[in-house]
Amino acid sequence: LVGDEFNEFEAFVKHLNDTASKREEAMDNVEIPDNYLDPIMAEVMIDPVRLPGSGQIMDRRHIVRIILSDDHDPFTREPLKVEDLEPLPELRDEIHAFCKKHNIDLDEEME
Image 1 (cartoon, rainbow, N blue to C red):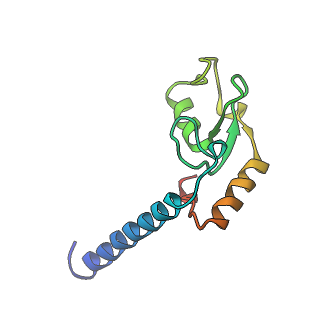
Image 2: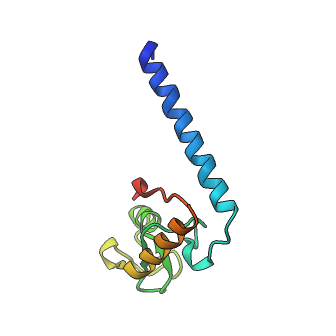
C-alpha cells in the first residue's frame, strides 16, 4: 500500500477501532438479559433461532457455522439442518429495541 491507499486503509482501521471501543463501552454500562445472549458464544444475538430438538435458542450465524461443520444439535447431538431452525422474529425485535435504547450497535453485517 502506498500514498492514498495507505491513508484510506489507516482511516478505515481507526474507524474500526473507534467503533469497537464505543460498542464495548455501551455494553459495559448496561446489564444485558441472559436470554439475549447466545448460550455458546455469550454474544448478543442478532438473529435468534430455536433448535427444534433441544429447544435452545442461538444466534443464527453461530448455529449455522456449527451445522456446516457438524450437522448435529450441539446440546443433544441429534441431527440438525439449517432449514430446521425456527426463526424467532419477536425475540429478534425485542433484542434490537433493547440495543437501540441502550446505544448498543449490533454487528448486523455479520448476518
